[in-house]
Image (cartoon, rainbow, N blue to C red; front, side, top):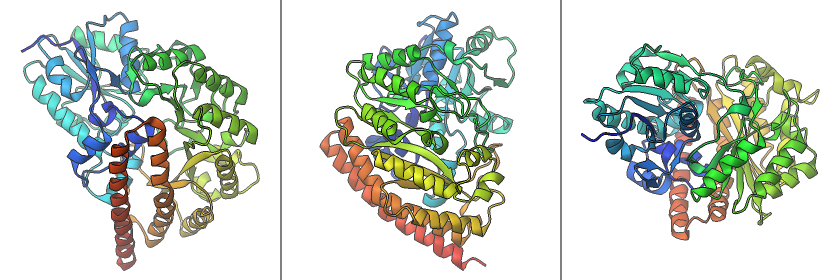
Amino acid sequence: MNDGFPIVLTADRTLTADYRLLFDGMLAASQTTSAPPALLEWLLMPRGRRAGGRTKVAPLGLRRIEAALLAGGFSPEEVAVVSEEQLAAAIGRRTRVIGVSSGEPAGLGMNSSTMTTIGGGRSYPEAMFGRLMRCIHRLNRDVSAKVVLGGPGAWQIADDPRKCQELGIDHVVSGYAEENAAAVFRSLLREEPVPRVVTGGWNPAVTIPPIRGASTMGVVEISRGCGLGCSFCTIGRVPMTHLPLQTIAADVETNLASGISHVALLSEDFFRYGGIGGKANPDSLLALVRQIRQIPQVGFIQIDHASMASVAQYEDSQLLAIHDLLAGENTQRYVWVNIGVETASDRLLEQIGAAAKCKRSGSEPWGDFCRRQLRRLCQARYFPLASLIVGVPGERDEDLQETLRWVESLADQRLAVFPVLYAPVDGGPPLDASRLRPLHWALIRACYRLNFRWVPWLYRDQQTAAGVPRLRRLTLQLLGYGQVLQWKSLLAWHHWRARRRP
């Protein structure tokens, strides 16, 4: 047996792959085991680069914990961030703690449950996490290191001791943990008592340590939390705080030093950066994007989430100026953004605890307000990926009909609408196909008619911008066309079954 490292930090293949684009990671996380695993890993999840027994890219959450441990007194020789393929060399007689990050340890997230309901099988992140844990269990037999689970999916099994035991997990860290990670790991190294579930220590944004190694997909955190209070979201009650420009720029520089020139700005609401509460601050966001654009060698800049309420606080000229800074030299390139609509029904939006979104639309009906903001984004050359939640408690047929009409009214716009099935944030079972009515499937199919038209085009555009080799792009396009045909058939079949159900 080799010596290994005292502290090993790792994550499954869906989180440590060397993606070119943020969209690649999203696409990989949306796959299920009904697709050929070997083909998916080769095409969508290229093996991460390695150096000195460590992975060169790792999920941002692991990088934050690594930075917190180093800032808390541990040496670089004591902490190793590795991929699954490196575990055999990293786990050895000196190993005392194995930290694992996961987004879907039980496949209970809305995206995963939606994909498996439609496509069958298990979600790929859940399956890859299970494979990782089996590998750790095998290597840990003669070491008996403590296994600690964290990451955005930790809530899925935090309250399930049986599932933790089944997976070989000794402790679960819930929430952000930069403040107390070093203390918890030090206690584990000393074999001191530590609770099975540890609440992460909240750290003011100004003291979040910059990352020490490159993050997967070039992800850089600009703010955390949301604070809009939606009951269906695990961070809806976490107040939004913003990282300072110095920390953000330092993280970009760290990625550039590892050869990652593209940047993905992580936030639950990109357009609220620098704001207070629900109020946006366009000047702060423009200053941030300008500063990043001025860093030498930065390629195109990606974003992820935004809210309708924040978009509404920007003038058209400001939206376009930010787009052009994000896109860089090729100002015709579209910048995609995830944006939550949830439903077109004001009544249902109020009922599911998203009243903050309703109030910010003033007296205008929520569906009309969202349609207007989406069209403004399209005119400013963004590519909106709107999301809907289907099957929430209290949903009525009239809510579904209103949302269906809303989706159909967007047929002339260049955008996509992704319906996700409601999943309780307490870890309860998500919806399955047997509980969906014909009207649910009519809405889902209407959304995917838009998606089948525009998403392949968007993906080609993104891959070209990222410099993905032509042969790989063509192979992925063929795979994409095959999945479109498969999903058209699956959606029609589910709809047919629902209509025949008594």
